[in-house]
Image 1 (tube, one colour):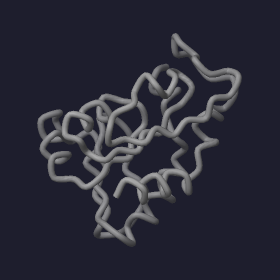
Image 2 (cartoon, rainbow, N blue to C red):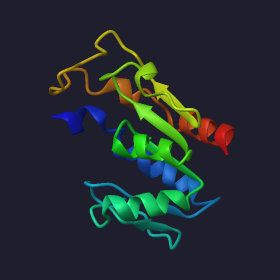
Image 3 (cartoon, rainbow, N blue to C red):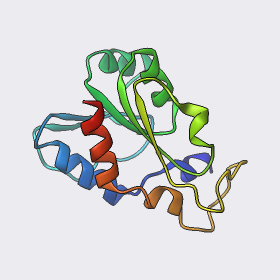
Image 4 (cartoon, one colour):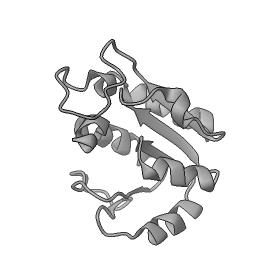
Length: 142
């Protein structure tokens, strides 16, 4: 269930990527998931097709990362990669702060839901984080 409590809504990811594509190419990386339904030559999905070594090499050449609380967030910190971390209610934001990162969190009364289990509140801690908030954080970092 852990992955279930760390997922930003797919509609939000899609809208953010569409906005980003006006400014830069977007590479979608991760160990799971399906490619977004975006037909644009500047969007490329490498989901499930990269090793951790390949991801590290890609990060070393990247300008920024948008991620949920995951291993990629921590790996990005090792590269001082500008990162926007979309954080659900599992951990408090102070648990994952890094110098070149902005952590966006919504802390509803049900937060700190550890151990992870299905969310009875429709993951509002994640869905309440808007595309505009992520966009503004990226602009600030970059």
